Amino acid sequence: MNGKNVLRLAASLLMIGSIHAHATKIGPAGSPFSATGTMVMRASGAAPTCNVTLSGVVLPDGSQAVINSVSVSGGLLCGNAKVKGLPWSIQAISPWSAFINGVAFDVPPFSRCGPATVNAQWNNNTNTLSVVRQPLGGNCTMETLSISPNPAFIFSDNVPAAATP
Image 1 (cartoon, rainbow, N blue to C red):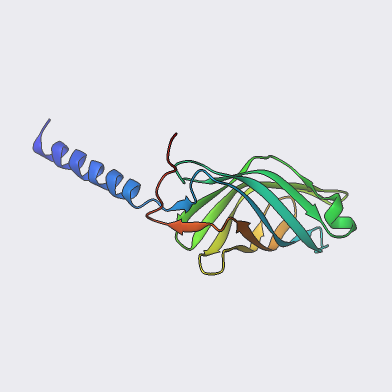
Image 2: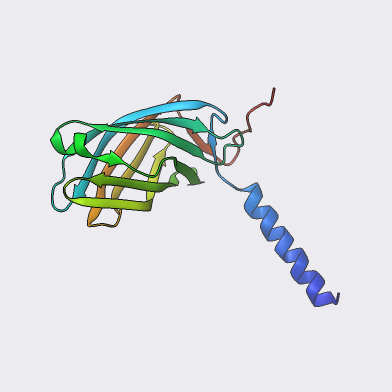
């Protein structure tokens, strides 16, 4: 291996190590959670405000929160929304932002929405995950989402992994 290739390899390894060392985690790692809040989803023109409840677990390494259950309620259109494609996941990308992966709904008789990855904002101080105007495909837009997990999430570059028994 010549000197140039050695330098390229060393630079690549340093970059990979740097990315891994700075990965934002979700805490408390290894904990089940529930979250409640509101969502406005526009499907073919209709945009009702719905109540949303979800539950899941933060993975032991804090790399993501897996959403295993979602319920939507609050009026005819909200009650007709069918959640699709579970599990979804929340992946922190910084201490103040995340992706919610796999978001999908059927909203009879209007649209099939998603699956999509939506951009979300996180606020450690208010324990709030929020989404504003994210397209889901299928003539649908998640106009707003605001949920608060319990126990409170912490997005951090320094969340320890869950202890193993």
